[in-house]
Length: 304
Image (cartoon, rainbow, N blue to C red; front, side, top):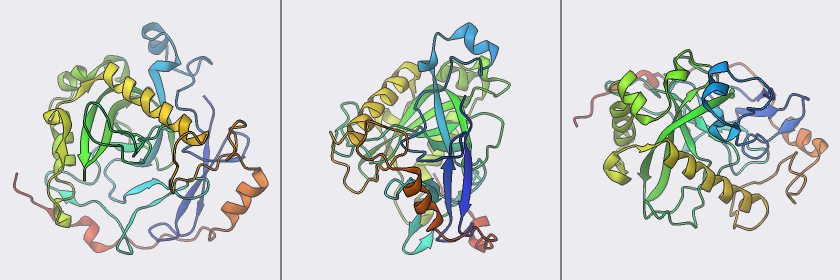
């Protein structure tokens, strides 16, 4: 598996904080466009149980960890910025933190995205009846490790939940890190119910109510909040990967999405390392973290 590193710019917990990505050659890349969608299953880097149970790399996907478990800062791949660094979402000029809604503390999984996927806002999903949310597809990683922001891990897909967020389809892929000690025991969504009872119900509850403290109504779901299985989830990922291909080859309307990349030779958006380095160095230098707002630790009790 290719190794990746990150370069911090700006001060953590500030509006100018950015996390840029580099490949194993130290070259700047986009985590949205330059990291492959599929994990590298062909170079002996995966656990032995994988080779016994799976036929190829199409069973394993790369995941960009945006938000470590138990944290509140809503970090995300900046799809509209050159090189798509991770930065914190902003609402009404203020950094966004998700509320602690009883009984949850921050995000209850390692949360992130599968690179080289895109939920096309011009495509109405035949299953949900809603268009895509204009972002890479989201992943909830359920393993035991608390990952680091910007970490690239390989995950085994188990199923998916179809959140309808303000009228848009927002798929949430349920997956587990292939390096997790229990990964060999998880092969489909029913294994999550069996081995970690209550976790899927908690996931639905989290997504249903996490915006309520901000004065918004509860979120809704397709399929009455039921999870779809592994094969369904993989089909969704493949579909969003095809939408991404159309995006970077100008066969889809990118709108405000920035498709700048450094490795896709067939893409007209491919830029030089000189240009990429200029993008990074133009951002403020890394500095000490700002203190977290005191309201981040506030807890909300929202009656179901």
